[in-house]
Length: 485
Ligand SMILES: *Cc1c(COP(=O)(O)O)cnc(C)c1O
Picture (cartoon, helix red, strand yellow):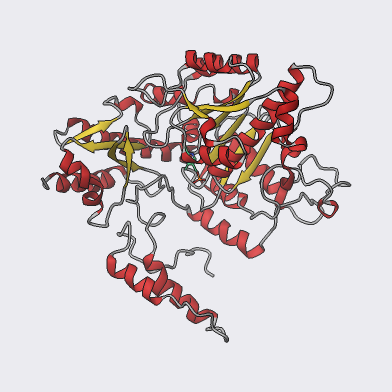
C-alpha cells in the first residue's frame, strides 16, 4: 500500500450520496452465497472498489455531506487506522513489557485533555470508547454506582451499598433509595438507551426545560426542587450541545450552582458533549462568547462524554470518556478473578483499560487520534472549528434574511455553533424541504422534528470545509428548493 495515497477509491467525491443507479448496482452486485473456494483477494478488492464502495455515502470524502454530525477522516487518521489494523493490537491490558500500545493510548488521552483544556488532575479516569453512546452508558453507570453508594454513606450504613456488588434492587433497598431519576433537557436518544440498559428505566428521565422558548436550557429552580425529593437519588445530565440545535444547556455560573446542589444532595453530574465539547478549543472572543459560556464550567462535572469520530475527524468508531472518579471505574467495570488478564507485577501507573470501560478486547482506536492531533496540532483544530462555525453562521445569516426560510431556534447568530437548524415558512414547502435540498445528491442534510414540526439541519463537521465554495453550494440548493411551491 502506498502511504501517500491511502484513498484509492474510485467513487465520485462530488456526490454526497450515491445516485439511484450506483446504489442499485451495488445492491445487485452483492454475492450472497459463501463461495466454497475463495474468489481471491484481487477480485474481491476490485468488487469492493468498483461495485460496493460507489454505493456508500460521501460522508467522509465529499465536503458537502451535512447529515447527522458525521465528521470526516483526516489523512493522518486514515493512515494510523490502517496501521492499527495492520498490527491489530488488542489494547485490553497494560503490558508495557510486550507492547507500547496502551502507553500510546494513555499519551493520546493526555493530548486530548490538553486540546480541550480539561486537566488530567481533574479527570484522572479516562478511556477511549466506541462512541458517545458507550460513553454516556459509562457515565450513567458510574453515576448509578455513586448515588446509591452515597445514599448508603449518608444513612451511615455499616457496609457499602454498591450496585456493582449487590445489584440495583438490593443496593437500593439497603440504602433506602426508592428511585433513581435522570434530570436532563432535550437529551440525545442514547441517554434513554443507557437508562434502559442500566435498569434505571427510560421513564426515569425527567426533562427540566427552562421554558418553551429555550427547551435546551436547564431550569435550576426545578432542579433544586427535584433534587430534594425524598428517597430519590439523582443523575444530572447536561446536553452540551443539544443534538438538533447545537445549543448548550448551561453556562459557567449555572454549572457552579449545579455542582453545589449536586454535592448537597449526593447527585452525579454527567455531561454529554459528543460534539459540543469541541467548543473548548475556541479562542475566548466576542464572536464566540455564547459558545465559550456554553462550555464554561463543564470541568465541574463528574463525568464527560466526547466523540472523536465527529469533530475530531477520525474514523468510526471512536469516542472518549473522562471522569473525576477513577476509583469507581474498576468497581463497576472490573473483571474480577480474570487472572490471565492481570497486569500485576508491572510497575506502571497506567491501569488496564479492560477494567475501566465496557469492552475487554478493544481496537487500538487511540492511534488515529494520536496521529491526527500530532500531525495537525492545536491551531489547526481551532481554525477548523472556526471555519465550520463561519460556514454555519453565513448560511444562518442567509436564512435570517430570507423570506422563504426561518432560522431555528431563533435569529441570534452569535449563538450558532456548527449546526444550522431551519425550516421553510410555507408548510407545503417545509413538508418536502429535506428531499428537495437533497435532490441533486451534491449536498446531503438531515431532517428532524423541532417542537413537533419537521425541520432541516445542516451540520458542518468535515475538515474539507471551504467556506466560500460550500456557502455557494448550500445557497444554490436553498434557492432552487425555494422555487418549488
Ligand atoms: C452523536 C451523539 C451521541 C451518540 O454518539 P455515537 O457516537 O453515535 O454513539 C450522543 N450524544 C450526542 C449529543 C450526540 O451528538
